[in-house]
Every structure is written in structure tokens, then in C-alpha cells.
Image (cartoon, rainbow, N blue to C red; front, side):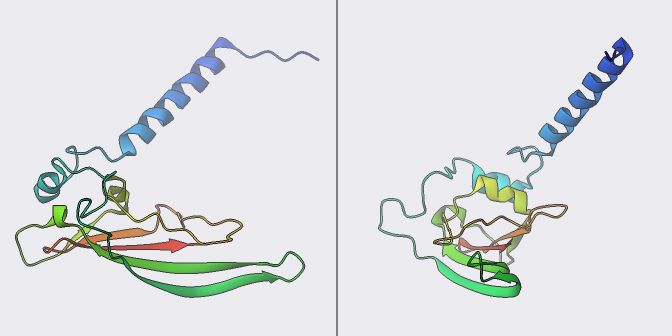
Length: 153
């Protein structure tokens, strides 16, 4: 049995897909478009691909890891599911600014910053918790210290 699709249906599908594409593109963080002036100044000339103190030795990264829950354990598969809160702290001299208050940033802005490449050894699968939005926090202190917190499942 052959099925037919009307031209109006195809046009509607194309229109909806185009609208979705545009809304997803506009949701991306674009430097200079939605950033506060202080962040715009910090990001001017900032290269997220270069680690802090690139010419002066390693970056010291403090880290804490809290296991919020262990949800399932499978002895047969030798695996488990857990929810983990990871906090990392380091100093990036490029992010020093005047003032006495820290800047709490939308988690999407992490895409503009250098962050440590953290992974769990021998993990079968892990993902960033993202119900409604990714659960990430970035806080920058006036001395350039960065606090990065996230929730992994």
C-alpha cells in the first residue's frame, strides 16, 4: 500500500525543523552578545586552549568528589550507577579582576574557559547531569581563582 504526503505537510515539517534549528543556535553562548561587561573584559584575548601559567610550570588543581548516591549495583555485570558531585579549584592569572565579590556564571559559559580534562579511570559510561540544563557552576574570584562544580551520573 503506497502512502502519500501532501506538499503542505512537507512544508510544515521543513518549517518546524528550521525553527528548531534556529532556536538551538540562538541558545548557544556567543561571546560578547549576552555577557556582562566584566566578563567581556576578562574574555578579551583569552584563549581557552592554553592552560593557565602556560610558560611557568603546571597548574595546581584542587579537587573534591562527593558521592551523592549509589543507585544500582550489578554483581553479574560488575558495574554500578552513582551520582557524583565534583568540585575543582584552580587559579588562572588571566581572570584577575578588580572588586571584592566573586562572579557566579551560567554553566554554559564554561565553554569559554579553560577547564581541566577530568575523567574517571575505567568508567564504562558517564555523563553530565542535564535535566533542563547541564548541572555546572562556574565562580570566578577577583584573584583569578576559578571554582568549577558539576554533577555526574
